[in-house]
Image (cartoon, rainbow, N blue to C red):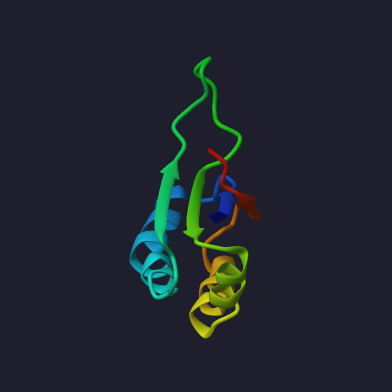
Length: 101
């Protein structure tokens, strides 16, 4: 199993980010086929009470790297990727990970 991880930096306007993310981006992303699991995280702090280095994280799980590549290259996957600049004012890092147990 592999996962695509999107780590979002702190946005210029968190309320605008949250509204766009929930009302526009997530519905676009929900059309990606082949996703076996989704985890969405909003960071709330660090163990010492500080501000986290990142704002949000999205993890999309796929059965294989081939499936991830196929689906992210699809029109639905590309629409999701192309939408990121519309709301991610704090930047985003996207990575692929091999899930190990």
